[in-house]
Every structure is written in structure tokens, then in C-alpha cells.
Image (cartoon, rainbow, N blue to C red; front, side, top):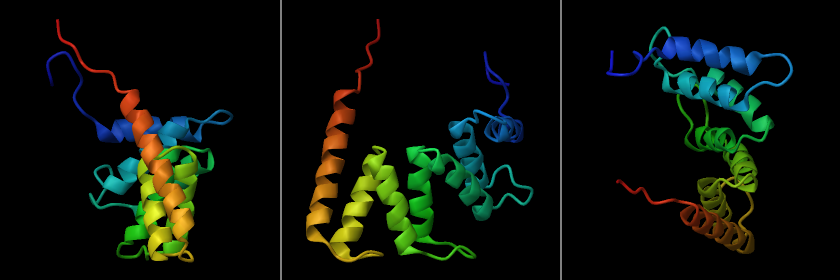
Length: 152
């Protein structure tokens, strides 16, 4: 056990996240996202392999609740594809746009590139430029909000 901490137990964490995600009423979108992350990573799965269907299901729940990181992860899943999980550039763009609208800088950059190249959408230089500028603005805002660490 690490000094002053707990032993890592991803299966227990997954179980807790699952309960918080499935909770009737106000579910935790972050918990749904974390269930998706753990399924995507595969470490909590019996065979140790990623469970992309489960990851997609929980990312979708969180994305539907406007959790930007889940929308971005969905976009990358559809952008890259995997065995048993085909690429779908149209869905990749859809989820990139939603994540961008929610303020995810990398989603804006990806969507900009898709519009520039006509990947999954009609080529649109003006839209590509607009999204690139949005990514730049979000990046600038993020840099402004970073507080330097000072040690006494």
C-alpha cells in the first residue's frame, strides 16, 4: 500500500462509478464518463481487453448530458475505428462538433481538420477556419486560467 494512501482497486472504483452513473434521479455524468474510460481501457474487464461497446454506451450517456470529454472520446472512437467497431467519419464529426460546442479545444481542432479535408462532411473552408479560430480562442482561455505552482 502506498504511504498515506489506498491500494489501487480499479474494479471497486468501476463499481462505485457504475452506481453513481445508474443512480435514479440525478446521475453523475462524470461517473458515467469514468465507467466508459475503464471499459475503453480494458483493465477492469475479465479478459483485460477494451470493451468498446460498453465504453460507447457510457460515453454516450455522459455526452447526452453535455459532458464534453465523453463527446470527444466518442468522436475519437469513430475517427479511429477498431476491430468490431468500424470508422464512421460522419459520427466522428457529429461528436467533435458537440464537444467543440461544449468547449473542448481538441474537438474543435479535429472538427476544423475534418471540414478542411472534407472528412465525413462536405468540405467547407470557412467552417474549418471558424472552428480553428474557436480552438485557438479556447486554448488561449485555458492558458490564461492556468495558475503557476509556487513552492514555499
